[in-house]
Image (cartoon, rainbow, N blue to C red; front, side, top):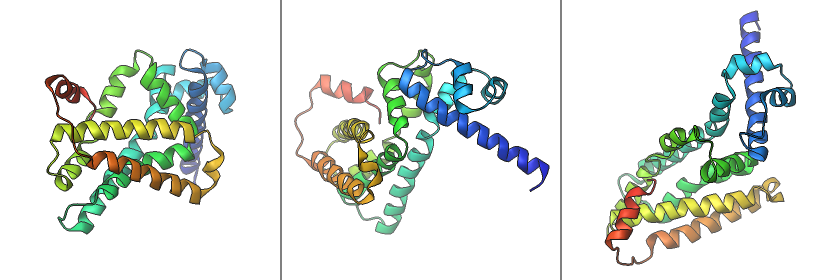
Length: 226
């Protein structure tokens, strides 16, 4: 390994330690409860390295909050696209679509329990500067899945499917938040069994007969992330 490669490796290691530590500390104590000096000390790096890599506490917080979000969103879409390619234009089963929707975030939470804790803080009591980032990250993330459900369940109006996919995300979020604290994370077979039960549960709600949508409910659907 040459000197340049070694420096790049050292920088990567430093940023990973900073992000892992930031994710844990911000999840435990919130943005205001963590100082940069204490964070650097906990990560085993000097304070100057923290400033060098991220510039500010705010930028470090944003990066720690979204870094696992991007890969899992991409993986969800990739799973769905592969399933659609295999189906050769035929509608996918509801269960297949739901599995693509929930598997990546479910597994990410089990592997990185502080991720869901930090996400919880950002959803329910975010620092003011996170509002724009959250809107950007959550905008239209479920559109490919709504489209897939519409292909499979053409009898259901699009706004109903949008609302139900939003409900599905809430089920996933609340269940994952609870499961991330459980010892099951070290038991792959049990994790898979729980995931399958979640898929069955959500699928039943997605395909259920619809209730009539009045104007107020339709207006709510338009504001729901999809």
